[in-house]
Length: 75
Image (cartoon, rainbow, N blue to C red; front, side, top):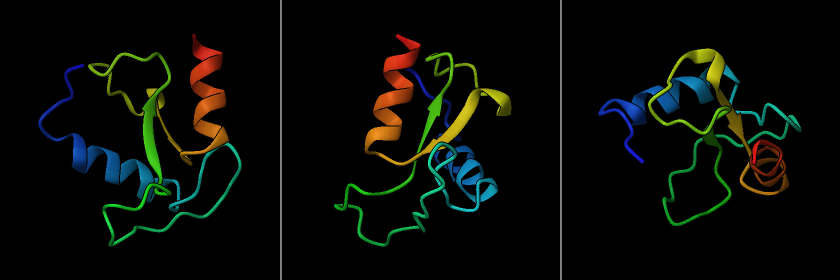
């Protein structure tokens, strides 16, 4: 998958727009200073196309069941 050069900034803006909350379960996942920790908010593409970075195609999700549920739903 090829993400744009500005992906980190774009993903951060989506997380900030969501108030650092999962857009499915509303769980709060503020920025984590420990990069080894796996319970951080993630940004995913609704249509699974990493080159389609329209804001309406991006969603902030917690890494547990919400991400799994959304990804499986899209398959």
